[in-house]
Amino acid sequence: MRKSVNRPPTPESDAVEDQQQEPTLQEMLSIKLIESGEKERLMELLRERLIECGWKDEMKSLCRAYVKKKGRNNVTVDDLVHVITPKGRASVPNPVKAELLQRIRTFLMSAAL
Picture 1 (tube, one colour):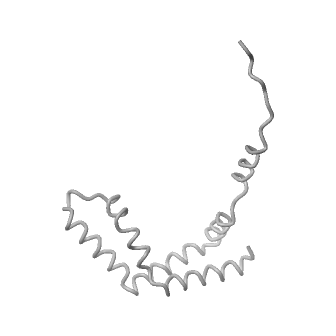
Picture 2 (picture 1 turned 90 degrees about the vertical axis):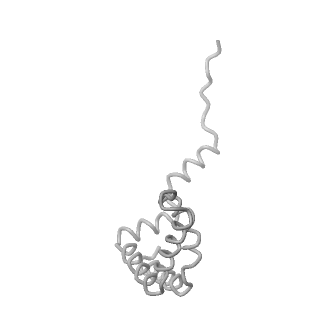
Picture 3 (picture 1 turned 60 degrees about the horizontal axis):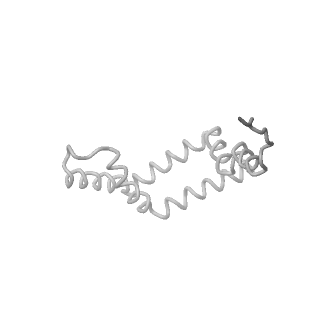
């Protein structure tokens, strides 16, 4: 029987480990948004804007139509999420997206990331 040889790690595996330890810009932004409380304020703004523009009612009616089509006992929440999510994301009005993006940019400038 041969004994195993202890070899030093390859440079490739070191690079993968380094990437996993350093947070990405997106992760750093997420942490800053949460720590500052800005994420919750942005979520509340988004909720308000989606209600104002009728998006929430539109999604509610899509859900009801899907449940009616499939039958109440044949639909799970996961089914609804799977079917409605792409439609919901695609139907968010551009002005709402633009306002949120502007608020995030403003936050980035003030946080100096």
